[in-house]
Image 1 (spheres, rainbow, N blue to C red):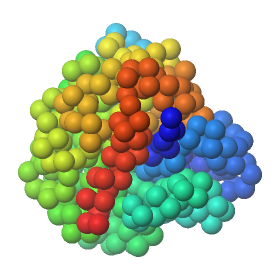
Image 2 (cartoon, helix red, strand yellow; image 1 turned 30 degrees about the vertical axis):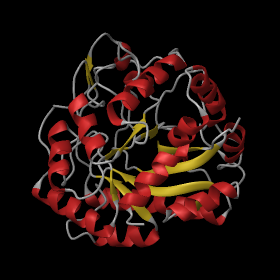
Image 3 (spheres, helix red, strand yellow; image 1 turned 45 degrees about the vertical axis):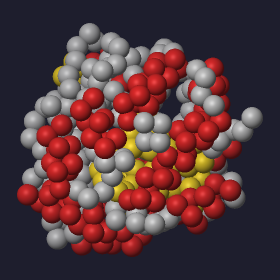
Length: 349
């Protein structure tokens, strides 16, 4: 029986390191600290790497976990972050990722061949990703610089507005049909990303924005960390119509481990059974196809089921997948091969 490494669609390790101002030494990602991701946990859990997000927090970052334990909630969208504030944080987090590579914790990968090589060598394979394009200027100079540093995936919005478009609020019950879509600059950004072969991430985008991208992009449609509205009626999840558009573009959906997007009641409650993750996986496979579904955990950025906790707990998910009847071939696809397929197609390999 094979144990496939998991290559994951989304994590927020860089934000955690940035916020804690942790030096890149033994206290960083080599097995200490309270993070969900570090080198020792990766080896224990069979975590092969994934998308490492550059994310600019708002000036007043507060936890809404208590609010999200209520029967219904509708959190207000944060204010837009200015480019001058965003660029400093984005470059700092990109530099953190480069320093992690220098210290041997991971390898920044610009091709699927590099991802495979890193995983074979026991290194975390890191795709530099940007969640929310606040740091991108309208002339795309920052995009060019970050692309040169390794950026290969970008989400135009997080759950707040940018110059490029609009994100969904954290709202339950709801769909992603919460407001406007792309701006004029947003359409230009999609075109430029297509030209540069940068993957476009649709997670956090309004439904209107999703369809704007679907109309103009020539790349597979990808939502790196989103689940199914049919099972959890949350604004962060995707409708069947959106899932079918992803299927028809030969795109990809990454299963989000955040419990509020898994549970039927939308609560941010870590006492959520792993079986609920399998319910979403089953549904996504049925609607999108087994070649277009993978993992999009949101580790170090979300409350995940207590049975998993950190990347060291990923074997529990694999066991649950086996118990659900997933065979070796399907396990390998869901754990990493599907991500490599869609990245290769998007990057023009």
